Length: 287
Image 1 (cartoon, rainbow, N blue to C red):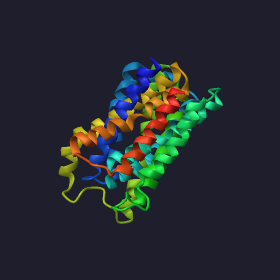
Image 2 (spheres, rainbow, N blue to C red):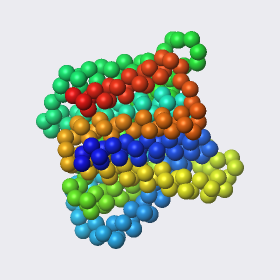
Image 3 (cartoon, rainbow, N blue to C red):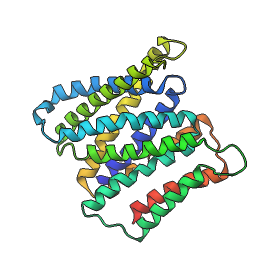
């Protein structure tokens, strides 16, 4: 079941990232984060009330609070990187956040084999190549690469934290609810400060764009919540290292969606680098 839950995580995160990346091309990234998380809070609040999950409150919820603080910063950075594009390069680099939960797995007793060590090396080389450094043609913007790496390690930290927040299914509902409430508080505060400094909370066309995008925003928020939940279940039912690397295959879904919907094309060296980063992830799992 570890593999099933982890692969479900990859699928859900991949679609959420694709949807979020598209939305930030029309709506300010902070607004996407806050609105999508508010919608997720409403649904999770109803689930917590229906299941009586609030009775399982305990010290483990501090892990959920920490995940809620880190998550919005990572999500905002990633959405900005996706808006700069191309998705087929940005999203695979985002999988390198697997280093964080893999490290947790090592601390808990997992030991990497030769293939896993090779996977780490392949992933690092993939970062360099995917950025297209000093080659003819327009490279991916350095800002997009840096934002993606920041987001990747933030996502990795969230994976490690949420896996520790609860050991039961109903407790996990409560942990996810607390995480999302924290997300809204942190993201909402950042949005407020941004507006105070002259930033925009709404697109130029006004609130009608937000209203029309509500279904997509709800999908992004709920898919991200579901992915966090399935990852926690995967990490609780098997080796953390295996769960982490399989869940981190989500960029494949995003890249395929970008290819199928947006018809993105990558330069050869960028495609090779993105592919090598994913190969590295697979080698880590296969070891």
